[in-house]
Amino acid sequence: MNFVTIASFNNIHDLYPLKVNLEHNGIQCFIKDEFSVQVAPYLSNAIGGIKLQVPAEEVEKALEILRESGYENKEEYNEPAKFIGCFEKITAKIPILNKLGLLSRFFILLILLAILLKFLFGL
Image (cartoon, rainbow, N blue to C red; front, side, top):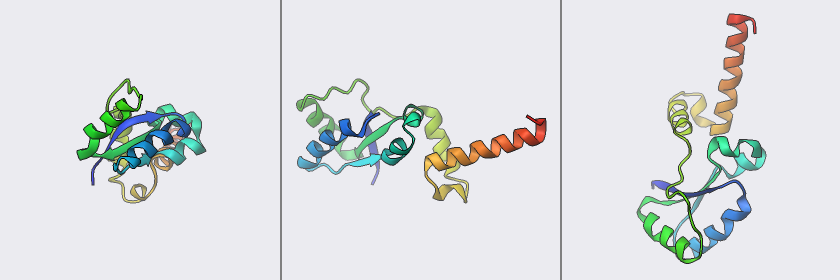
């Protein structure tokens, strides 16, 4: 099943009432990057916040339910930055990294880059 992000938040408490409302109306929801932001809240903007996702075929219905309940999404389909999407796709192809979460992949590659710079330039 293909899920689409319909809203993103920096705070999980803002997301849950919307999730409950959608589920009450029969729309299956998925929360992406919830634990990454809870563990490292300073990375929220970098990874696009906590994302509320619904099945692709339910997007219009979900957005209509949210509008009717008073939620105003300033950017429909509030997807993370292109860099994050590209990073996720590229690192998913690396055998060892593809089993890890996005945040873990980022830190491992950051550490490897620091080691490489230290080796090459003595930084």
